[in-house]
Amino acid sequence: MSGGGQSRPPAEGQAPAPPAREPTRRLFFALWPDAQQRGALHSATRKGVRSCGGRPVPVPSLHVTLAFLGAVPEGRVPELDGIARRVAQGFPAGGRPLLLSFDRLAHWARAQILCALGSGEPEAAQAAGEQGEAMVAGAPELSAMLKNETAAAGFSPDLKPFRTHVTVARKVAHAPSTLAVQPVLWRFDAFALIESRTDPGGPVYSVIESYLLVKAEKAHE
Picture 1 (spheres, helix red, strand yellow):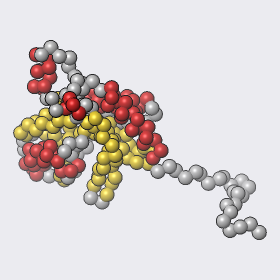
Picture 2 (cartoon, rainbow, N blue to C red):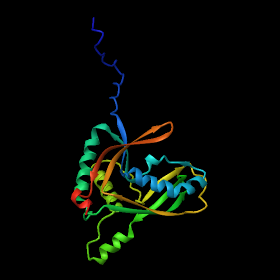
Picture 3 (cartoon, rainbow, N blue to C red):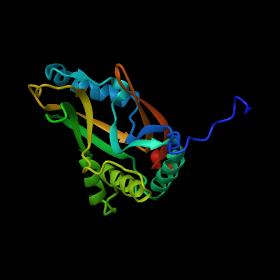
């Protein structure tokens, strides 16, 4: 008689049980602002969010997505960490933080979201040009590097063109009465790998790791 703990081979003609699927994590790379930066954008966009009829995104969840990766097998997360470190090391930041200025709203009807739209801070670019310095890369270039490197490694990043935006409301029925907002400046010397989990109240985000773009001694010059 066989022991009760032994597994039985499949019966003749019966397919073997499929192997257990490896757990996955829903991941993306993002520029992850601090509480003060989030608070400033929340204050600037609050009126527009209230008038659009949508559901406000919780202030602690405001961020700029650089590269959305979707479901990633648990065992491949260290590969993403290695890619992020290489990108951070090779990113031509020129010793300056990334500067993003948000000054208008946009209603993306198909996605039913309200976004704060941003761009690279023009004063920083102008100052670099006046001083004869090389133009430094910004958020679009960082996004492209992360997408290219992860795709080359066999991941499946969302390859839609990058647009600097922060989703501030979801389930939006109509555009707010005004799309202009008081300009808000966000600055970053790092980017982050983020995990997204879906709770009954909506997405919940947690930082897995951050990657410094600007050396500490340069960040304070």
